Length: 425
Length: 150
Image (cartoon, rainbow over all chains, first blue to last red; front, top):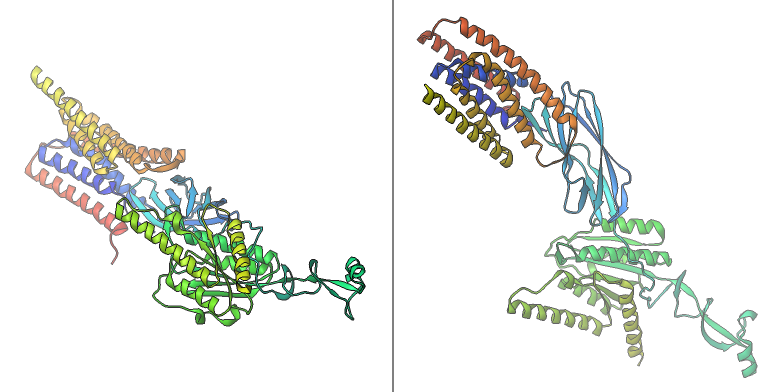
């Protein structure tokens, strides 16, 4: 805390001095008598001003919440000094963390006294937010000295992204031999009917299709598709984002990634995460709730890191990209490096789908005619990129911020079905 | 004599208006300097009074100190959302206590003035020396406690 004289103190000294000098110059002792209380006030204040010793504790009723939810911060302030102090305090607010009350609070603390204040903290965006230290201005009991600065601990408040509830997911082309909820293309033990075939040694009697057996005159059995899990790699593009005052594509991308991770892990898939941008982070594939927390914690640290480095598939460790995994790239398709990565992955035979977080919500054409033309060209260019990706077999789910992700994914599934037919044809 | 009294009255009204305006500007703009200008003008206006000046000066000075503090408190608490009641009452009580002590000291000084011999160069020089010494002591005290550290 920086200690300094209050802006009024030099003025008070000047008033006292002016009174004394005026009295001497004019021969009116009344001026000196009027100024005497001012000088005594300043002298008393300077002599009696205490050392500031404030102790601050900050406690949150919960340290993890969903974005948009509210946590209550309790601030305990204790005056360990020898004199009373007048304290104005407010939590240090950021653009992403709304605090109520928004204005500073003023309290008077006698020596040894403790007070408790509460603030409501509401994160406007997912991420790790800091409640505290407090912005504090303290004054002595006569208002002649001030102490300014930040006081108290930093308490982390983690806001998890609000999830997209997804009913339909992108169906993987290949599944893994673990029990799951995706209908595998292979035949075996399962629920989903696949085909009828002649009875073979080893087939169970319950598999026999009696109608088909009666019609063909030889034992026939039902073949079924087993339910398997799949490997899913969520690849979030953090090279660039489009941002305006209401948010950015990265915010939406993180929400979509969290929703996809939750939905795939709930379906017993193994999920990996690759944060592909200026800095490269990854989480190896794993099952279960622990992996969900790991992914969400990793997503909270996602940020746009500006970089000229050209990254490609070789930058990603092989163990993060298991063979046969479905790669879901969540990207605003703004950076050539992420486009090149997606295309490269597809050309290497990977099953790739792009969830395009549309930047159009954050971009508007400028006022002039040339701006409007540039905007239309940019949109055409984006459509060309989308067509280029689809031409190599990459499904693109265009997702607008306000919309539901489910229908966009259903559109991709339709594309993947037709693309497969085209390949077979 | 009548016209002198009238001019003094006009001057007092004018000074009071200037002081009030300066006070209002200080509180609106948040400038302690404007408040101090108002207090200085009000202090100067005291000289327009013709009688019992020595008797009233200590109380007048204490009153001006209280006005200055209330105006400064109003400036300091601008933009503060919630103000606990004892923030204002405790400080005002402290200032009132010191102002009372200051008025007492001032009254004692007034008594000393009435008993003092007439104005002379020597006494004026002594007074100037005392004033400079007092201001130097206060400035040194302020510098020692809150001045820049080496």
